[in-house]
Length: 576
Image (cartoon, rainbow, N blue to C red; front, side, top):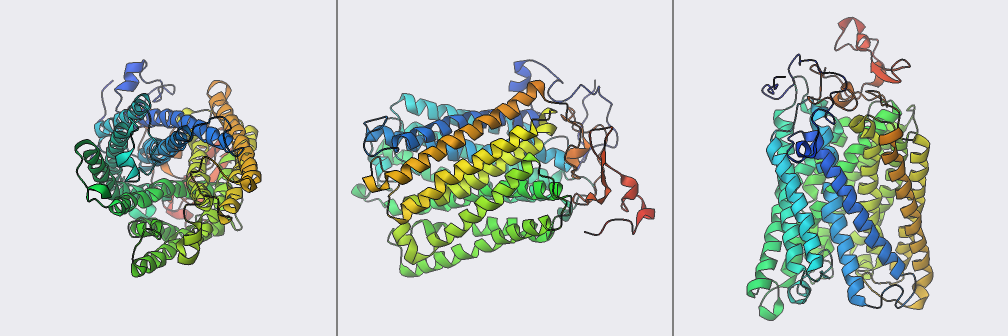
């Protein structure tokens, strides 16, 4: 069978040689080598997915170890504060660099973005595969650091501790983060070019699904902010190896300079994690409300606005570091401003739900959970952006709770919702809806029991990163630990629901939820070339032409009612 070349500027050809229905990307070629050397964006995305989920299991295990240790004051399951320090460092580093940052852009983005564009692949398939193996290299270096004595610097690698600690695994883990940064940069660059060059005829900027806008804004942050982290980590490695005073004050360095460099990347990195999740929520809410997204352009522009603001608010992490009063005031004001584009999204999502015909599917439950958790995370951020309250709350469990409501309660919940949303498309199998919904509720309850309690801990002065604590804090730690066990049960049920569907799930239709964007026009799982014929670009949020077809067991698009296809249908299109 001849190879089909992608036409310029990247749209699919009008016709593609027909393939057997069973010839999807999973079965097109078999054998492990066909996966190891694949250039297919879908297979690369699936490899990212399994790798990230494996890292999530490891990072979650360290989280349970931390919560179990904090069940009682003093030693519980370890009598070494150094061991505890390594646990929370590993938990943070794994979850941030190996899980949350790549989970949506590199995994789900790789699978879905080209199909949403109606393209055959990303712009640079070989760079895409190289990015994945850079991620694998970074993960391996993390494991090597454990074999070399571990590291206990915290996931932020703050100086001067990271330059003076004798832990043998510091340089390998710094190198791992450096390599992972290149993986993120190359992925972002690939997506920017793909969105610019491979959009099909008819898909203008304001006809793109909002998930593409979110991934595009994320890619800009990845390309512009990540090099700062790379240079910072390289300077840290140089300082440890050749004893040049860059950050170490004993050698004339400035540890606060490290904080500026680190947070100039790491606050934008927060939006690398949360923006793709916001894009997923836009898709889930619109599709499951069967209603056009409210304020499409406002949501699209708010993604770009968040990307812009992310570069100018890093100083709110450093209110207690000795900055001038003027700089603290400016960073505080800008931090309040970043809430505006985030609030635009939340209000528009709620407006979309209003008078919508809501289907409470498992992805929709995750979207609703996201709305609740992200709102709490955002509102508690206002306390930390206020100078007078941040001085009291800085480096307490209040910050831990806020961070987790935004990162885990929002970014990770959004990722899991997206995984459920596109699972039938990716693997061609339907999961158990009832079990998926039960698992979502258990995770939601466990999460709030775990982290809402920590707001109270922090407001009463319990510092974070401490191995031991005063007895009056124990009741809160016990409740928080119980919540972490409840979450573990929920994630276990989620794994049973999803992985079990691969063996006994019903065959998924092409369009199980009633979506209108292009990925729902191809088979489930997608063919090797994504589409059997060039997909028709329409209004991706016009659900008036989408109807349930009992013969298909899914939805179909009745284009006879679409005025863009049939001018005679003008006036029959449902008002949005």
